[in-house]
Image (tube, rainbow, N blue to C red; front, side):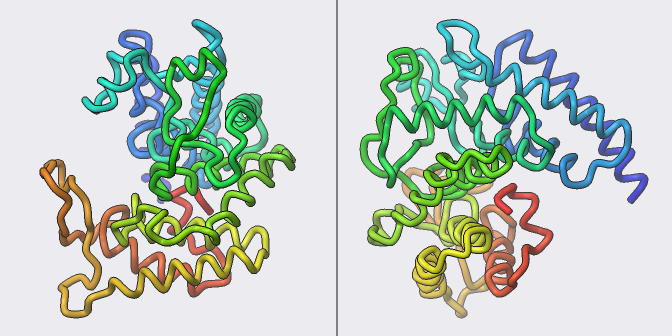
Length: 317
């Protein structure tokens, strides 16, 4: 383990250096800071396992970068705004002509927010929480407090509104965002944002399952991700209503189990192992985020009264 920690410290230092150079050269991309490939995952690990002086230095540098990311620059908008030329997805590139800020957990500001919640209170945490609070005040919808992205135009005009529902998943959508906000707000003792997050989860009881737009049983963008978050919220708040919502969603997950299938559960998506299909399909995957392995771990967590260690990597518990 000592050898691994030394290697991780060295690799993290190099990733920070590479990320800083890349941002100076071509601007910010989501992969610079996000939870999947970026520095949020590094900080999440350091906040929970880092012990050496090198780890502390890496943590300090990541926090400084996040502090810059959330601070305002041109037009009073965060430095972390993804400009059009740095948008990878072609559909988003066409839609967000002047760029956007991603609010989600896997690729957006909620990733750094969740990672910052694993370490002692920082100015960066307060800055990003204020950003989410400002957006909520503009929107003021308890059942859809935020959304996956907010456009340059909406930010400039202080006119953030959520129009319609979207997938209630870990990666994008309000479950992942609200959980990250709850964790950060708890550290800062921000009662308003804690209540906002709790009220969102309570609002799920009035929705039909189809309204959640969860087609896959998996963690990343499916039923298991929502279950993990509901489980963490129930554990933290002790609210029976959240537990009842969790049980209803669990019943839906179990209803799609097929013991005739090799892995019991199948991923449902338009993209599988880097290939995009014209229509969604079912795929066998044993992985954590997009496969049956993550579903089995989720079911294990739901049976435990305490957090299982594996949950730490998702930064929701």
